[in-house]
Structure formats: structure tokens, C-alpha cells
Length: 589
Image 1 (tube, rainbow, N blue to C red):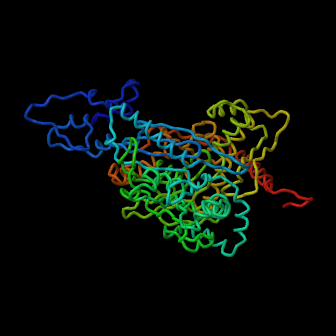
Image 2: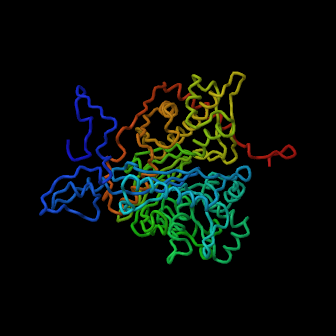
Image 3: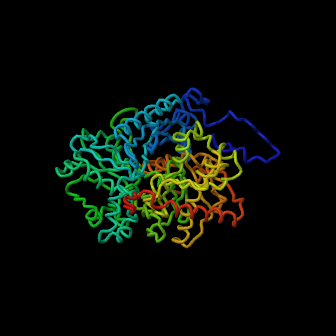
């Protein structure tokens, strides 16, 4: 059976069934719960600083732990700061969560197309999650010193500005799908050199990146403009804001203002090839680097760059990893080889395709981005990305705005109440359409409604909208990479729906691979931190992490039928264009 904790019933033949559902040998967590072996008085037990009491007692003198045993009782924390909630999870060295806490916070929509968060509320939610998860962790018999380090993963592009002198925010955070900058983006597209930006930073001009959000803040918020002119303006994405404040903010002896290259690649300020700020990009957006405090760009995994937690339940614990949420999900899926891809079905939907150590600039509407940069002499790894603004938020819309269901998980049951979409197509362009279309002037549009249309048809059409857009992105990736994807790894809240995942497999014609443990975004940040602090030495040590219990959805629909449905979707997309534009005196404005 191997070492303690290695028991695996799969090793037994089918004819021999052992069913012990409540027994988990690794659950012997508390020292008093462990079986204590008897040692002669003159042979003391081996004790080393990194041993949990259970492991210290089962080792004879002079015998050290194997790396596998060490990973079993080292722990890594992960802050997962998303669009609708914050979470803190604690993983063991085998990638399993042992304690966690989640807290939702308020999303603000002050005007049509505007989307904001209160920066101090984001911080407070993270701190509360840490305290509550640590309380649960201690209740299991562990202590703070068992946690090697923590990582951070975060919503990207969301822009925070604060006073560098006081550390206080100067305006609400502008969230990534916010479209208040659409007029600004239209003007920028007409400027000289606008068509050269993508080659430098990998991103097309749109309302999506942080650059245009910062421009809007400087031009429209007096406090921000004044701080910029006086050289007090600090800028960052959510990772920078949290790292800065967790380290003590302006009151710290040495304030920590950093970002990693995956987050920096979403600003349009970083050169994708050098992984440093580019003067030509900053100049294009009218940003004078002498007037603004930009976060230093560092690798995604580092034992020192991100500082330490200054107070609270994790006081003194190192922050050693940082990844934008979609990069983190790719790492959590262990997508370390070129050609591997993952799709995260969260508030939005984000598909990343590993292209190796050289960036690929898309010709078909995709984004080029940094997948991860683990430092330590390793080359950065790049990805092609397709971003969909609305996925889980479409389900939230049906629940909160239209009252279709009482909880998000009920949407699948409602969609299954009908055989198909009844001819209904829902283009969920609440914030325009992202990749591969990039239509800023589209609005959410329902097509094909008749007197026979039921709630179930609209629910099914909402799930299908994400699947159709994913199909469009995969087609673009195939053209850019000249390779067809063999399978698609998935995670995120909407991936819990078997109907949605089967629909995805049917529409794309490729298998959809879903892990049993779907906290892959948080796991990716934990992996980055663990690599920096010795929990895992190399990527090869992660080959078995999160591989058990995966479910594969295989295509069942005929190819011709899938193509017919997709063409109807493409027709609906074309018809959704232009709804943002207003007609004045018979002419479009």
C-alpha cells in the first residue's frame, strides 16, 4: 500500500470492493489524533523545524522526510480576488484545499455602461477572508508557521488609483468590463501609430485594457488630475493595490508597489517582448512616467519582491506569487506545454492557449499575453487569449434582473425543461462583444422570440451564448497557430453545469475536460508562491496535481447540426451591431 496516505482503491481489481467513505488516512491532522509509536528512551525522535508533529513522530532517528512527505504538510495560501467576491484558500502540497472562506462585495453601476468597486471594500473583504480561513485552519490542528507563503490572483484590467503620499484611493476602481471609455477609444483609433500598438503590447485598442481607464480618470476626475500633475498619483491593477496595502501601504518602512508581468501585460503600457514599460506606449496614451508612480514589473513567482503581510492572522508570512486570474487558471490546470488550453467560465469567460516562449501576435482578433513568468532563469511563457465579457454574469442577469431562478445553480434545471433553444438566440453583449469580434457598439439582444417562447428557451440560449463565443475563439486560435486543439480543459462556476459543458463539446466538436477540484484559479497562485518557497522545486513536481477525478464530455451532436447553429449565432452577432449609437434628426450620431 505504500507510505501512509498513499492508499488508492483503484489499485485493486474490480472483483475486490472496499468502500470506506468516511476514512481518510490524511485526515489524521491533530497531533493527539495520530498513532504514537513506541521508541526506546535512549533513541529520541527526529524533529526538524519543518515537520508537522504527526510526521515527526513516525520517523526513526536519522531518517529524513522524502519530498513527497514534506509536501503533504507544507501549506500555501491563495488570495483569489474576483469581480463579485474575494476568497482565501489554503492548499496542501498535493494541491488540495484544506480551508477556505469566501465573501461577496457590492458591485456599483452608477451609470449605464459604468462598473465600479470600492477599493477599500476589496481590501477589507480579502482581510476578512484571510482571518476566517485561518480560524478554520487552526481548528484543524495547524498553525500559521505551517504556511510557507501565499500567492495572489486577481481580476485583471480593473484600475485603481491612489495618493502615493497617503495611500488612500482617489476614486472607485473602474472594473474591466466598464465601457465609459468607448468615445475615447474611438478617438484613439484615429491617431497616428494606433495600428502599431498590438505588435508592441499584444492588445488591440478597446474599452478593455487599463490604459484607457487611467486616461479617463486623469481627464475627468479632479482629484486624480491634481495628484497626477503634482506627482502623487499611484496607479495599479488590483494585484498592486492589494500587495501595497497588505504590506502596510504608505505607512510601511518600505512601501511595496509592484505588479507581475501577467497583470502588466493587460495595461497596454508593457512591451510584450521586453516585459518592461515602453516609452512609445506610454506616450501614445499621454502618460508622463515622471508624473505617475507605476508599479515595478517583476516575475510571477519570487520569494522577496512581493513583501510580507504586515498585520492580521498571516502577519509576517511572505507573499511569493502573483498571477492575473486567467493566467493563474492555466497554471492551476498545469497547462505548461505549448498547445495546451483552458477555458474559465466565471463572470466572463477566458480561453488561454499556451504558445511557448515566444509571443504570437494574433491576426484574427485574439489577444497576445503573458501566460506566466516564474523567473529563476526560466523563460517567460506566452499565450493567445480570447476574452468573453459575459458568461456567469448572464446567468446572474436572468436571476437578479428577470427573476428566472432563485439561485444560479438552478439555471441548468430551467434550461433542461425544454428540448432545445426553440429558435431563440441571445447575444449577451452587455458590455459590447470581446474576442474575436471586438464590437464596442453592440448591446445585449434577444432574437427569435415568439408567443411559444418560454423561460427555459432563454435560459438555454444564455448558456449557448458562451459556448458559441468560445467556438469563435477556438476557430481564431486554430488559424493563428495552424493547429487544431485536441481537447479543452475547463473550470469556473459555469463549468459546474453538465448541460453547458456538453453543449460546449457539441458545438466545438472537441472533448471538454473538467477537473474534480475546480478551484484552479486559486491553485495557480498557490503554485506560483510554492515554487518560490520550495514547496515544489520544478514544474515536473506538479504533474499529478489536480489530475484525479476529471470528467470528459465528448461531442454527441452531428457536425452539420452544430455548424447550422453556429451560423445562426453569427447572423445574430451581425444584427446586434450599432445599438449604442443614437439616431438624431434621422442620422446616426
